[in-house]
Length: 295
Image (tube, one colour):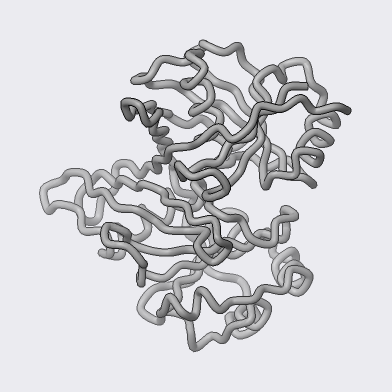
């Protein structure tokens, strides 16, 4: 089986978030896809179920231990690879169909530096946090006093979103996966996405970390699927300032720095204060290896 190894949200091999991509997966059974993802051992491996060149691209995503409905960095990796091989035109607009829903994808050429992949990410509805904050932060190696009190802790789908006051507090977290699972799983939660508005670089609005032991990933290096909803949420709370009469604001979310795998996720939010029309994430990628997996 041919497997492509791609680093997404970076132009540096070994940085960002690594994904496996299998382009000829239409005939594969689910157990084979799961075994393949376990053998590749990236945080996620994407499997292409449609014919290359189709306007609608169908994907499934597997971690080493489970299938997940959608994965941002593996989507960036797959569309980067399809564009790099000339199987999709760039510039171009495509439709992604996956278990997580239907997404709009735009390919933006970057000259000799490849293609930027833009994913429109409808945010899941924000719900109240069902977990005691003191207990949650204890499983992360932190304290509730580190949480930013001016912003709410919310639930978005299978994750909690937790704002922290300081970058130093975010960097110092030492999660305990088993303890996190014991606290989260009874509520149907799989992970915790934490961020601070103390970013490292000019042009960034936040730095984030994402712990997902419920999917067998203690820490995900760079998470596109969480960055889009965070971008919309930051715009709702004024950290990204939309034009009074409508327009688009752009920024960047940093992630992976504490793992030595810095990745940068471009974000765009369109709308006006109190009315968000669209949020999307963008990223570049680098093909690291084309390999033959021997089963």
